[in-house]
Image 1 (cartoon, rainbow, N blue to C red):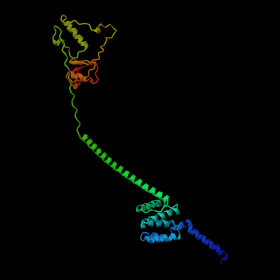
Image 2 (image 1 turned 45 degrees about the horizontal axis):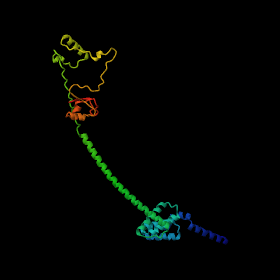
Image 3 (image 1 turned 180 degrees about the horizontal axis):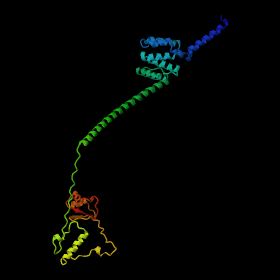
Image 4 (image 1 turned 60 degrees about the vertical axis):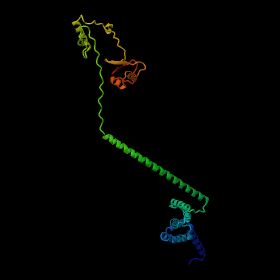
Length: 315
């Protein structure tokens, strides 16, 4: 049998245990998952939202610090009863009771969603100025995102047009490349023949025929001297006296002075020597020719860069 004097002590201990059990979140949290009213409310949420709401309110009346009860009641008001103000209240109670709530980020997003629904309905919340400023920031952020989305859509349409244009240009270039590959290669035209002027006739000496006085084709210097010597020996009376050349008069051991004339050798025919200020075009107009005629008559001469004293062949 217990001592009657210990009864007050046991009664006080029992009361303290009950208070700690009702008020301490560390003692409530392990039992929230097994709470019978919460489990029954979750089971009836889809079929009977009002009954689920009644059960959750009953659980909160017994223990207002049940974070899970606030969570389930907030979801019920947001998704089934459309009581967005109550949803905001219960979501905020969840974050206040359980700062380490596993779904804290989702809770914040759901609060913003419920507030937006309230704004759409034109419902003015009796909220604090800090909450109102937060709502204003949310609205401004929504407008900014809508503007950014519109700009991105415009850029996408512009890029689509540019992509289509580039695809069309690519197709045209491919078609042109195929056409060039299929076309036969053009045959090269034969070069225009360059007219060669006829050699000027050499005057025959007295007593000689034109055939004898004409120089042979392509003789060497030694052959020419030998033929001239033999011709002089054959007819000493009729051969013209041969004057010694300047090279022969040069003293022994000194080289004969070579001419410094820069004129190109002209093998007979009409010629023209450029004067200061003359050009190939002015010379062609003077002789009633074209510039192409002069180029054909002088294939190795650059008519675009002529100088005074230079001689060219006229066709």
